Length: 145
Image (tube, rainbow, N blue to C red; front, side):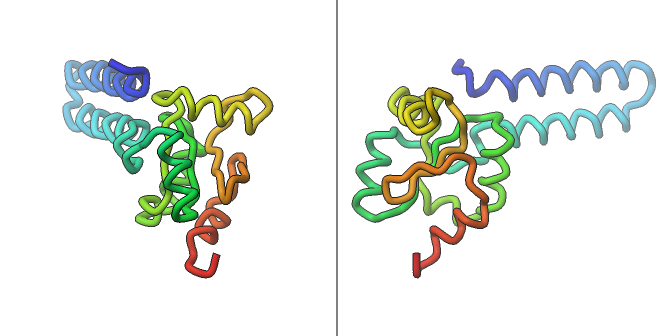
């Protein structure tokens, strides 16, 4: 198991324990609602909501060819989640690099952020931008950009 799944698994386990406690105390409806809420929270914090990640080297190569931005991210990051959700379907037009799975990606983020692994770090035309406004990232995807 990789560490990207630790947080979602802990959320599911916690939700299961809370729901079990409620169900055994005679509140099956409340227990079910709580379990569903925890499952939703686990899904949102999992890598499942992100487009498939690629390696940093491959992302740089592709970005140089077609000019698409690169997003360095990690599961569980609320700012990454905000960016991903605000982009909607357009998120597929960016290259996503999970820094927990790619050492080159983590090194690129540290180089851009004075040694910190601050994400999301978006690279547009070779320039890194740390935690940019999602509206600005959407503008970078427009045909005129």
